[in-house]
Image: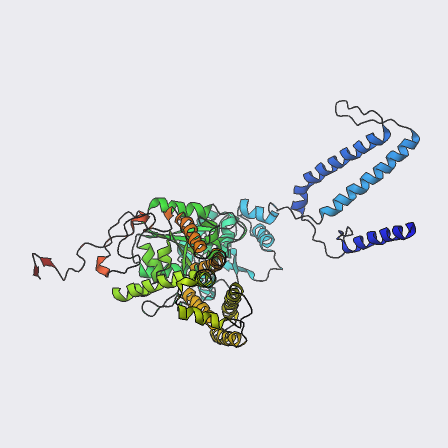
Length: 630
């Protein structure tokens, strides 16, 4: 029995060793080694770890030998013991050394320490342009990784002056306009014919003022500015004997042309949408707002890869405090790379943990222009077709340009209809669950009997029935978005019809629930702002849970908490529910759309410099003076 128990114990230990995770200390296969900068930075940590290991080893030796250890002025510790004790101590040394090697072997699997930058990056940040062409060529080759990097071109040529001047140009193939580059090289190599001055500064002035036909030319002596210019599509000209470089504007990369809006389509109104090119987007706004007061300030975000961010506003309308706050938040972002305006929105929003979006993102230039004329600020990110507008309220996110371009009666009807769909998009399933489970007396008898008769053969409870249909709708919605081409809409509609009909025939769900879920899905599609529609989709499941547990009482509690949380939100200092919470001057453009000649003032919650939008009598052709019409 003892032998069997011992064998069982041994087998159990082996089994635990087999199924448990053990780190492989043998560095076989691919191992990502640390760079020189990381090794230098972690050298101090290694010394501290070694000192701690030595201290631990010394403590073990003290316990095993039993001898007194004394320190004098930082000298080496001395130990006393017998020969046998020394052997034990030697064994302790081997064990401590093994533990030390084990710890060091594990260091290769730790998360790499962020590097402070390579030598090339340091040259880019602190280096200055040299007067020697060969020295500049070596620095550029180190910065761009030449000759392995094939899209960075160094073009050697000679400027046709008297005497000739050796030069070379640096540009990135694919980012520049070849026609403009040919004109530059033609002007320098064929049509120069000027006397070359002996000084480097004078030579730069000669090339800039008399030889180059480019309209945007910058002179710099910094490698950092040189890299920024070339990486953004410019061409750099280096001259022999000159410690400065000429940066010529030659941007000409491929880009998408201005097209129709994809996510904010309207029947009436402009049909242009923003693109991924920053200068195209700023030009679209300047085409609509033809004013010298329109300012475009360029900021850069990103420590490793710089992304240009443009802040546009009207100087005589926008609140200076709002403009300063927008620039402060953008300049305070520390990140390697900013890919899209959606990422920037998450960096600058006031309440990142709340579901409601507090920044408006749109792809319509006319909508951004209408917000700028109200005194708000637009934020454009290079490479993103969606423009951010701050501050933003919930009522603005329920508006579109559709009701503005139509008559006020039509716009008012659309807004009230959209308000109804907004409430139905997250309350309708929860209300159905509450009525079916708790509040039968609120339904007409015929309707209650019809619901009970349809659910007679359904084997699932009501909550499971609703959740299955809601998740099926979410699956169809996501699949319709991801299916390429025009097939997405067709598959979504056909899939919903087929699944709904098959579920009813299989007695999995009741027919009234299919209608209810379809109406809820259509209501969420009627919300114009995608982020706000996504918010209602998440709130819908919360209200389903509240209705299934507490009925109307739970839904009332949820509405109360949601109103409290939403009224506490702010967008760049502006309450999210203005002009209703807190109560401010509502104006003529909240839910009810009044005629355009009643829109006499701008929203007061933005505190614009000029609150007057139009005079009290804007239709001057219809003047009434003492009851007389002129």
